[in-house]
Length: 177
Image (cartoon, rainbow, N blue to C red; front, side, top):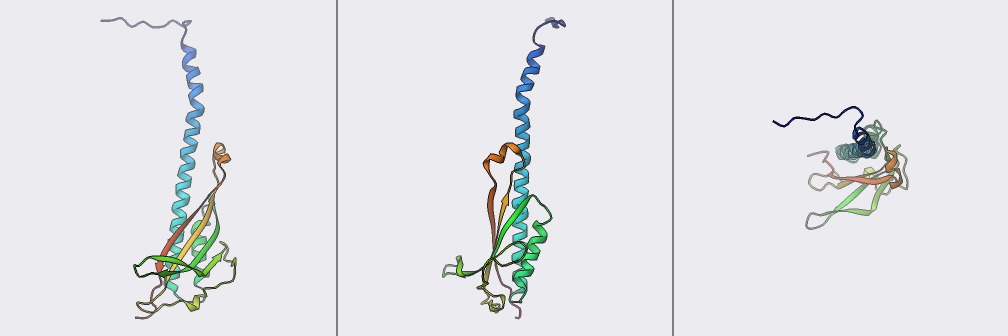
């Protein structure tokens, strides 16, 4: 059996552990803050995605009612307004054109832009009353939410705010069968 030697109180080496800890602690702290900030970013994206889907669902359900866009934006505002982690810059509601292969592309003419409070950023070229809600021929609608996430950890602030958007496509539901 090999005897274990214990250091005496005055022996060298105790300060080495403290020095290593002092070097590693800031790196570990920054890593934890980065993971926390990444989690908040993922939460923001998930919240924006959920709000976009719910706003599109509301628009599809209401069809060509006069208050369709207002109610869709209200639903989006209710979902994203409670977090305060990110800010919504713009909500777009637009018509989608379908080609022969079934691909959907935004129509450049029928495109409505709104602020999150519901005020229009331009003239409303795609009035809700003009939307086709016929059985089998109803229009496709797209909703895009543009948002900005500001980093919460101070060392990530030099990267600047992160701007992103979430889009959802849906077909308007027929009001009669």
